[in-house]
Length: 147
Image (cartoon, rainbow, N blue to C red; front, side):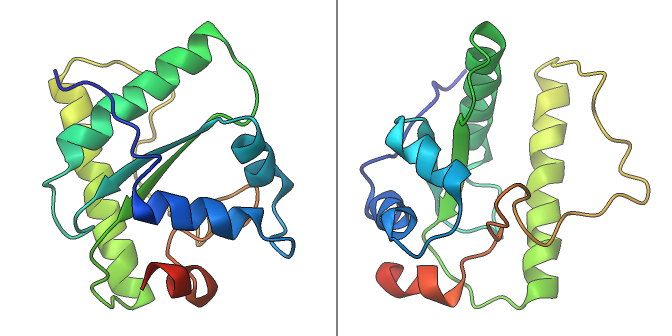
């Protein structure tokens, strides 16, 4: 299997870290993860393509194994994509669902078992990243330094 990667020094990851460090960035959770060096990054090419799924999967598994061994707070994995296809929200969510399904399929193919897996029936992806309201899509404010 491909080894987990951390693209923490990639220009997109550095721009994201700079964005989180900004005084007006409201999420204490993300700021804590950054301050404790608990942010991991995978930079992919394009959310519309399964090209990077085999790079994302080992990083997901590595994060889960690390947390299982030492369940400290603020461990985070961010997947950023280099190509901004100018997708509207509906297209972005469709492609995000495709990435999640592809990763789920690969997870099953690799023999990973989880009792916590959703059936997908009626499930909806949140419009944001949850705890801090980080959007799963780049906001205009975040998009600026990455242009």
